[in-house]
Image 1 (cartoon, one colour):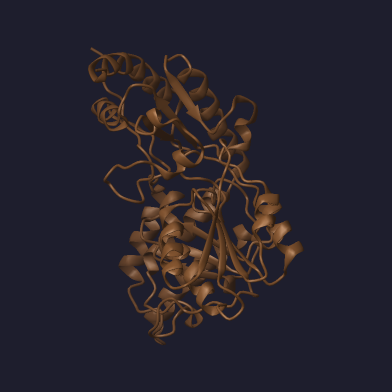
Image 2: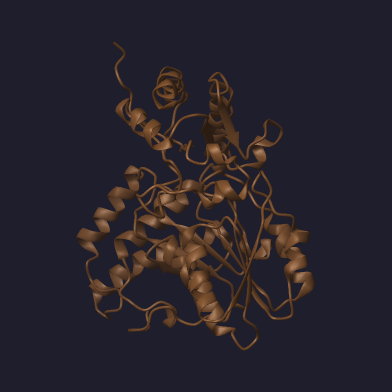
Length: 391
């Protein structure tokens, strides 16, 4: 009987922390326990960890440390960017543009703003999860104050033309702010927000082999934004609250490590994706979503969405789990209660496949051997489960 192999293929949900990150977090928690706002030596020691992390992240973005606001993670970064800028620019207008397949941490704050009287335009995407910059241009209005899109879709790995979208926004008006949810992109591709024409950019630590509960928001100098949290005035008054020193330290180191030899890491992930796609085709009744063979490298290197005709994704997910394989049936960031994916609906996945889709996502720790094991398990499980679930 074949021995199970543990295969963690849910890296779009969260990643295994780097060992050196764990060591630094423990060091900061154990020794730099002073309040970073305190003026004595122990406070200065803590503040140095924050400064070092900000410098590390700023180097990856080619920006200044003053442009980095540390947050509790991607959700707070997105909420801060959207609500903070909307409130600060309300006199200029109340129209915001986004797409119909954003992460809940973007979609829900926009619904909140809509209930406050803002007008939200949600643009459609094509079957590959793309949106033409011209489509954004056509939606721009005199009262548009903000455009928000994700760079990499967390469910299907579609990559949006952020620079093209930025160009049409700038050509229309220099006053409109542009927010990019880069939570699935940061650490996987080199991002220079100033050169890309991006005003606000969100990132999260646990997506890049860093700690959970920590993230950052890049904010350009020209952004006017209301403070999201009020209190002691930390981080220049932009985000009050005693900073999470161990988490910030770990985030900074993870960011630095993921940007070291990034091209090699990125090509390795693409090699895994190409291998997995070539093997998954060996299974009958399989559909790969938003990733046509001709433009694999125009998609994110670490995400593959696969639909299995005639199967319920939750059943297949748990069958794989019994073999030591861990995958997702969608965005693990929204809820542990499965539901119909808005992303899959947005790209036109047939209704009969909406509840038959799994997301496989890789990291630098993933091996081809693990992918081969996964495919062999799928070859065994899919026909059996299809017969079992067929009425």
